[in-house]
Amino acid sequence: MRFSTTRLLLISVPIVLCSIVVEYFPIWESSCGVDLPGLCGNQVLHENLSPDKRSKAIVFQRDCGATTGLSTQVSIVPSWRKHPYGCGNVLVADTNGGDAPSGPAGGPVICLEWISSTKLKIIRHPKARVFLAQEFYHGISILNETNEKV
Image 1 (cartoon, rainbow, N blue to C red):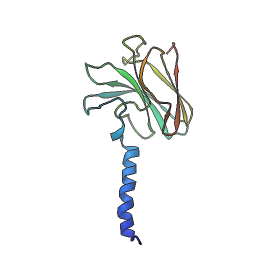
Image 2 (cartoon, rainbow, N blue to C red):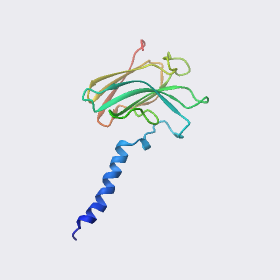
Image 3 (cartoon, one colour):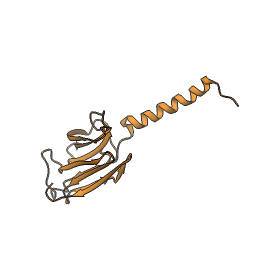
Image 4 (cartoon, helix red, strand yellow):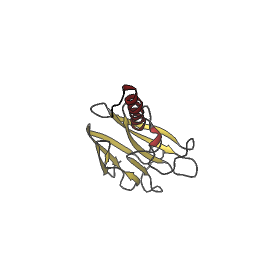
């Protein structure tokens, strides 16, 4: 069976477009449960560009209203993205009811250090309550460390 050029395009274009949507748009980026649009807001605290400048790690405060506590979250995103969408994709933590010290935005302080373009170190206080701590994300190894001085 031979495929005509038109048939081949009709099959391949939707596949390519679907893969672009999945890779670059945030509609599937939610790691902290049900995420209702408009109820939560993210405030970027700082971001670190990877050595190869292809990715960046963003530390942000996530606030979902008066009935929830503040959390500090980390997402790894393409370097061109301005801000994170949804929940953090590599780290989600809070102060554990005040056991861990809070930073200026209310959640625990998180420090980042790129060791290489494929290795990111995340440092947090040992008493911070961690809801998500990935060890690997899209080809990037993540070292999760604790330090009392953070």
